[in-house]
Amino acid sequence: MAVKKAKISRPPKKKGQWEDHYTRKARDEKYPARSVYKLQEIQRKFTLIKKGAKVLDLGCSPGSWLLYAAELTGGSGHVTGIDLKPVTVKLPSHAEALVGDILALTPELEEAFSSGFSAVISDMAPATTGMKDVDAARSLELCEMALTVALERLTPGGHFVCKIFQGGDFDAYVTHVKGHFRQVKIFKPESCRKQSKEIYVIGIGRKE
Image 1 (tube, rainbow, N blue to C red):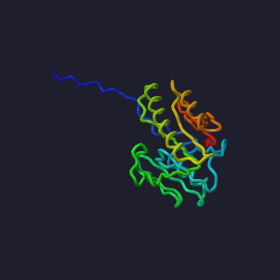
Image 2 (image 1 turned 30 degrees about the horizontal axis):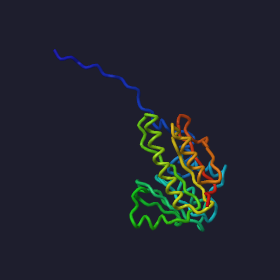
Image 3 (image 1 turned 45 degrees about the vertical axis):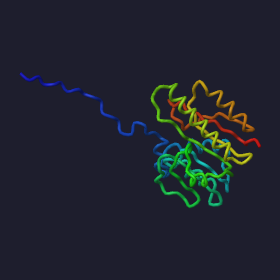
Image 4 (image 1 turned 90 degrees about the vertical axis):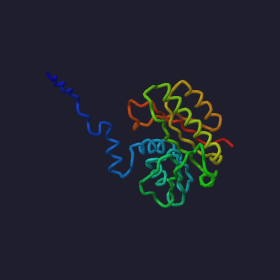
C-alpha cells in the first residue's frame, strides 16, 4: 500500500521583505539602491564633495553613490567608479564606471586611476557568511585596501569615506586612518538598516 507523503506547509515568502521607506524613496527618485541616502547623510554632515571635485568611488555598483557624487561635483568635476560588476544605469557625461579589480589593475585602468582625487569613497562590503567574526575580517581587508588606494591617489587635504563592519580590529583600523588624516569621524547614518553592523570611518583632510 503506497503511503501518501504529508504536505509540508511553509509560510510564503514576503514580497519585498527587505523593502522599506528608503528603498521606495530610491525607486521614486531613480536611484538604483537605497545606499544613496547614506552618502547624502554623510555629505550633509561633513560636506566632503564640492563642485568641481574629482571623486573616486570604490565598489561603485549598482551606481547610487556614483550618481549622487556626480550631482555634487557638477559638470565641472568628474567621478570615476570601479567595481567587479558593471553599472547599468545611465550616467552623466562627467561620470564613468569601469569594470575591474582594484587589487589587480590593468595598465588601462591604472591610467584611469591616476592621482589627484579630492575624495575617495567606498561602500564596498564582502559577501556575508552570517558569521560575525568572518564577515568583520573580510570587511577589514576591503577597508585596508580602500585606504591604500586613497593614500596613493588623494591630494593633500582630500577626504576619505569607508564602510566597515565593526569587529575586533575596528579600533586598530581607525588608529591607522588617524595617522594619515587631520580629523577622523565615526558615523552611522540613520538610513543604515537597524540590524546592520556597518559603520562609516571618515577621514577629513589628508595630511601632507
